[in-house]
Image 1 (cartoon, protein in one colour):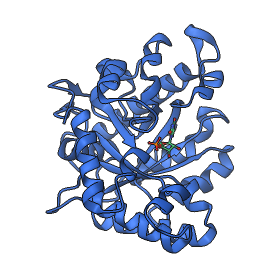
Image 2 (image 1 turned 45 degrees about the vertical axis):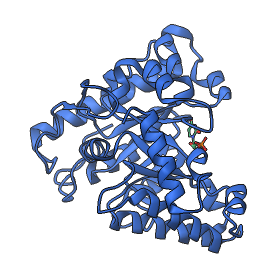
Image 3 (image 1 turned 60 degrees about the vertical axis):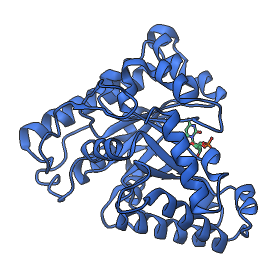
Image 4 (image 1 turned 135 degrees about the horizontal axis):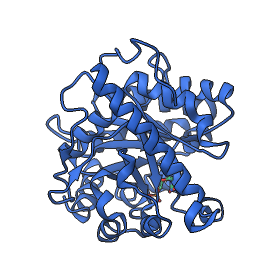
Length: 323
Ligand SMILES: O=c1ccn([C@@H]2O[C@H](COP(=O)(O)O)[C@@H](O)[C@H]2O)c(=O)[nH]1
């Protein structure tokens, strides 16, 4: 990842790591996944149409936005596939969700899992991370299958605009191991992705310290993670996070991944419906736990359609995470 152009950090927005850390401190280490599956729409008595999708999305956002101006979660993560299946009308709903989340000051992570050769990657980066895009989110998930360095256009734009990326490293599904564990204990693909993210965050954090582009104080200082991590310190987080499944967190140590050394957020899907618990995650992630943002979709969304039911689901999930 190369340094952003001079002045490009001057976007009036604090760096992603600083903004996410503040949100996690305020609300706890939980992200609400917004996955409008046809079955959930049906269970909520909504049609499997853009109208149903919109009602579903706005209700989930209302629950996430909390009461009295304080968010119930650190972030929301819309699952792009489930908007895309409705075509352009689905994308219009997604644009509204992202816009209204921004107005409510709820951080957004677009779970789009994008990745392509560099020249095309620029298009994806502009779609999800550019200030001018109607689909701009605070962060986006990326797939490194075309090579980690092919993601550079997105990493650079994220850093320049105070946004973030989450690169798939160890995914929560069992099939992921056939690719991510390849190379063995000493040289797995996941280990190489983890090392690359650590390298880029080290450079980004050092450069924001030197140039003072953070827009806030303390962007490069460790903060105490007061959310389920006891008093453990959370390292300052750079723009490059990793996706590490909550269901496979224990595999990271076996594969020699230095997750704490990444100095980026660790987005952990698999909490809830896929079987992972807060206690299991704390053990599995070990010293990296303060940087973990657990994400849960179906387990909480099944508590709808009432906003009260969804908020109760969020409270229970946070309690399980030690909040
Ligand atoms: O490794 C991964 C990467 C992404 N996901 C996504 O997270 C949610 C999980 O939904 P649940 O209902 O909480 O199981 C979904 O959008 C996945 O595409 C993942 O599960 N694992």
